[in-house]
Length: 462
Length: 105
Image (spheres, each protein chain N blue to C red):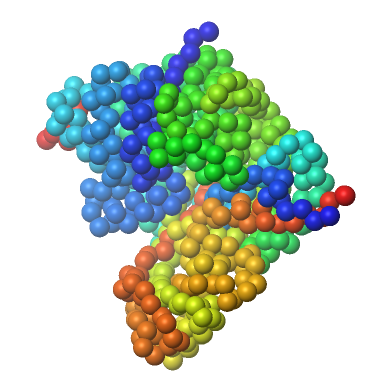
């Protein structure tokens, strides 16, 4: 049976640029796929684009491509990424510029658009789209005025199209994480659009690989002490058969570990209902998948049952939702925790005295409960606590209120409980963004998807 | 006898909107039998109530000896609007591993 090898390059915007080099050099792969977009990422990119309209893509695609393109040209590896974010054309231009600098003007770059519906919201509403929130059923209502970005999750077809048109590098906006991996398989094996079980296996491949090191020994909850050489962690590589079954592994000589345990943890990661994992390409039933360790750092994945793709696509809208102000201050033994609590009371009263009424106030004691909140058990012996760092965050409608909060921390050094330190400047107010998920009939979206392929020499050249 | 889930299981958590998505994996057949019987939706709901404003959904995934939980309203409104340091709920898997269950001797 014919097989193809595919590697993972990045699991999110900000992931390390190093492991992908091992995948390219030693992974023996024909494709490397990058998933750079999480829900939070689009919010971050929107902030960037508002400051500078040429931004809005994940900026690390530039150094990434600078490192990779020469190796990939030599080895004939094709690259697939949703680094376009909310500005795929901007990303394509930036990557083309890098290719030209490297003397690779003939490199074919594809740019996929049609996912961004920000400018189509009113038109879609006129066609009867209600934008009801998928979770709460609420109507969009006055949130409409505050929408900052709106992107639909496209599936793997557009990526396969780009590859059929000869692309060496495929850059998309919000295509799904899994599509980065299913796309090349559709192209390689020519799977039919209704071969649901094969598609489901392709989605599982994508799902297992989309978070890079999280399947090959990273973030392993139990047994992490025994995972070798995380500094040189091998990002996942899969050997995929034409029938859709595959073996997950990693490049020779790298650290990390591909074990049943590491694969299982990623297998169910963020998928919600395991019987109904919905993607634009197929609906997967993860309770049918078979996982088997077949060698050292080799796990075979097979048997996933797929059901027909849904009639709707998911859209994610981000909307402005006030500001977050925060402040930090640390206290040392003795009674560090009690001092930090007293400081929090003082700050709350100081806000009150200045008429600041936050919509929400969140108090954390770093070292005690900043990660678990009220789930963290209280310390048994306060005398054992060396230090505690207080963090207070507020949500407000105005930036000014955030500044008032930050301003109240430094005075505690002289006029608060004793042995306070490490105020660390005054943190700047941060814009908060709410997320709104909704479903849109796919026939209103897919005809707008566009795949443009051109040589690097042509992109962005007037 | 009281047993901590950490001694029976491994786990991973992530986010989707305002929900924390937590998977709990039994280390072996014996542990799978125990968590299937004793880690109930009611128990997990009560455990996360101090930080979650919404309900908890639960699924069994027998092929990987796992229980899947979706804890709604646990992330302060979702990552980009959350005031929490752990705005993605990455550590809630560990919080669940600290839960104790009462098992047969």
